Structure formats: structure tokens, C-alpha cells
Length: 226
Image (tube, rainbow, N blue to C red; front, side, top):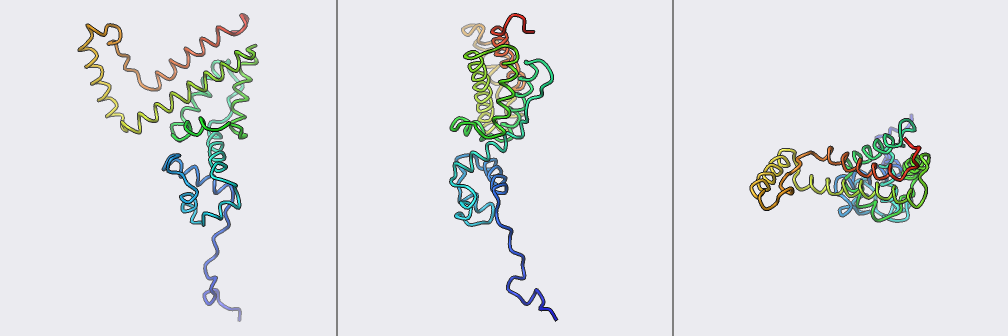
């Protein structure tokens, strides 16, 4: 009669070995929960219920993991559609990018510290460059346009994420905005135009600022571009 599994030391199946994919998925979860400052290889190993040194069978360093995690979440943005005008393509891509960076608030901090050379990041930037290049924009204006759009996106979202990490709820946001409005209006005589507060939300301000930049880019396009 074959020996019963219950009589053996290996009665429980061994946990499968790690993989780079599992490490990256866990890294994204850890970054979402703790941010960049709370990220460490020890904390990542604990999340995976593995030994810290076992991670180094799949990656060389913590920086490798951060690079891989960042490019993984870039995949959530997706490549811009080839349909539509150049403005529609860029607006759609930056709007989706902002949404992903709101879901993963650690992204702007990492983006500012490393080259974006992963396949997902490159696919997105290639499509954005292409949308403007097809309209006749060439370096240095092309490079400057993309840099300006990127800086606006990353700066806006970083500020927005910091705001919501502090204020936390729409109700608290509305209350604070109302108090600011009341204060400025009470000092309208000395503030003048500055007291005329535009109480629009983040979505409205993002699109307004983006359209101002796109208007500037449009002015640099060849005259026969729509």
C-alpha cells in the first residue's frame, strides 16, 4: 500500500518559487500602500512571505524593482489612439496618465529620478511624439513641447496627490475652499482681481491648463495644420 501523504514531512505542498512577475506585482502593491519612502526589499520580501535574499535571484537591486514597478503601471495608461486630431490624442493620453498617477501616487516621485526607458513608457512617449511629428513639428520645438506637457502633467498630479493626502475628503476640500473664498472676498478692496477666486475643481483646472499649453503648441505648427 502506498504511504499516505499525512505520514510524510512534506504533507503541505511547498510554496511555488518566486518570479519576477510576482515580485513586480507585490512591489506595486507595496508602493501603493507605503509610498517610495516606505519601500524596502525587506518589506517587499515580507509581503511575498519570502526571504529578502531570495529576491536577488530575480533582480539585482532595489532600483531594478522600482524601475520594473514603474514601467508596469505605465502599462495601465495604454498607448494613445491613432484616431482623432493631434489635440484629441494628446488630451486623451494625458488625461489617462493623470488618472493612473492618481491611483498610484508614488509615480511622480519616481519619474523624476530615473530615465523612462521601459517598454511601456517608451510605447506611450513614442506615440505622443508621433502625433506631433505628423503635424510637422520638429526639434527643438518638438522636444520642448513634449517636455512642457510632461512637466505640466507630473507637477499637476504631484500637487494634486499632496493636496488629497492632506485634505483627504471632498467635504474637507469644499469647506477649505469656501473659507478661502470668504477670506479673499472680505479683502477684495486691497486684492482687486486676486480676490475673484475661480472655484473650479481639479478636473476643470487640469483641462484648462492643458488647453493653454496645446494652444501654444498649435501656434508653432505649420500654418496648414488644422
